[in-house]
Image 1 (cartoon, rainbow, N blue to C red):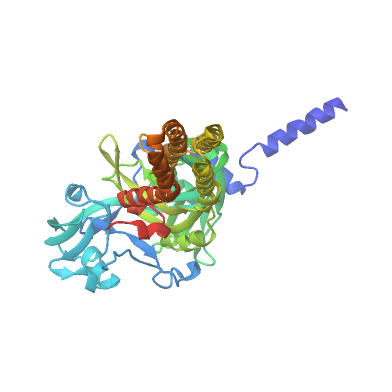
Image 2: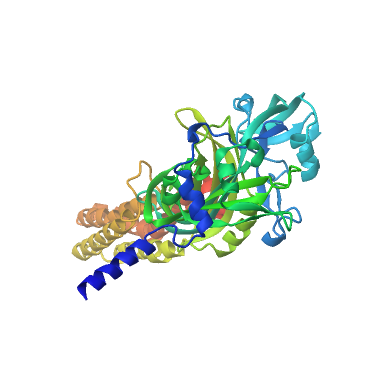
Length: 517
């Protein structure tokens, strides 16, 4: 019986730990055959396309009314526009334009044509459908200044790499460590043509694809969800190997599921009946943790940007990375369904650009930008309002007779200790900052105003002993009663107005009244 149990255990390990157990036999034959296939992986010929344009792309946004299922049938994206209807430059695609143009430049005109008056199709024809190499005069706006730039239409060859990059959820925002945990999906695919005469394509024709003489079509076996490690072990070239999060802190392998899919299609671009197109698709879904910069000057009335940047570490000069249109359309779904406790979702954008953070080397970058606004009612009603109430109680001591100095001191000291306790609550949520937030200023002002009745009580008690100073003592009491609490409230308003005006873009819309323009 013991031997039988050992035998069953061996069978379980053999079948259920073999990564190919759920695949078709042809897929297994294709992958295992790669181990012995003679080809140099480092010099494989990548599929490339010839491009003729002005050397830059424009930022895009989804069309709200178009469903993702109809994305291929009609326009589902549009150029992102400024308030004045000008398009915005996204990624720079040629090295010649790196020093001339920058991501987020506002494109005012091309050869004197005002782009705010042109529709998307007309702008696209100017940028992407140039017929010959010529020089164009551009007017761009950068840092609120208009700049004239000359660029040439250029013809270049790159591998066009489509990218899938979708945000599923934001699981944790840690302000103290400046980190974000999020769940998402990313994928990339590379397509190899039969006419490239590459050994792997020929190997695919001998294993997972064949030409059906009766129906005169290519028939094939799909090989989806191949475990990433198994595909890599068998030397399958995977485009996803070059994708990386720019600010990645950690990746929990138990929460990231990577797979590879191999598919064969009939190549419609040739007249040969048995020419195939081999597609190798990479996908990863899971949870990642990244660094994120937070500006907390306006805390707890702040707006923040969460930027999740995905970089393709392949050479900028050899690869053109561009997102699928569905990436943009899925933003509509993300905006509706993304929930972050304690925050309101203001906007979700998909951006394209270039990354220069790796020693001056240029990489293609795609990012998802989430604008969030803090729900401040918690801090107003559970921290700011109780602090104000403590200050009112503290200043109520000025209504006691100057001789009741012990009672006055007891009240003010208890109030001061209560404020210190609230300070610990805030410190647990925020990192050690080199600047003061709105909440810090409020608490600092509260300390001063909590200590003031204490000082006034001692002062009034001392001068009240002498008859000639009793009039001064009464004046001090009158001013304290009249302006104590009201001056505190006025000071808090001044603190809010000043801080909001320093970073208006980082403050919730509810405080727009406090912005000094």
